[in-house]
Image (cartoon, rainbow over all chains, first blue to last red; front, side, top):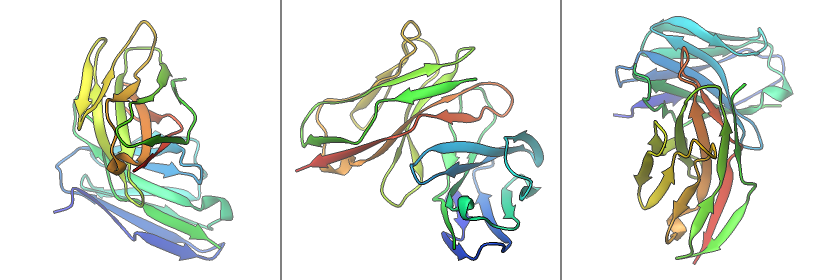
Length: 113
Length: 113
């Protein structure tokens, strides 16, 4: 009964390929996020969806496209993968309310060769 | 924009030592403040939070007090254990729109027996 789950946990692929990462939360939250953690452990917001609607889109290349089929799922599709996309990608969710914390998934380690 | 600065790591201590990890922030309003912990190979877990000035968050022996006058949220623990070895992230939530988290750079803590 994992609260926020991601698949796959590890993803190794070649430059130029297209790949997707899936995220699901069973907490009933309305808001979901994608964060990127680089090799120095720095975490930065990429996207946020509230009830299937995109509300944050930080300066992320167009090759990254989030999709939210329903409020429990937020997937991340990446086209034409580059070496610099290698990172750990974390999904998170949060309940509505001003001070609520975010719950994170276990992360997906993406390695682009 | 909003930002969070943590003390540089890594930090290495002996078991039962006193721990302080400094965190200061810059924000236009009055954000909520969080400490998250990342154990090796895992996602982020909320350690504690504070939502207004002078609030003290506490959990598992860790404490942090929201200091508006010094814009700080330092993490402390009186007696650390080997199991506390992890990377610790200070973060703020901007309370606007999707309330994304802005993270500090993380501090790696190693506790030796």
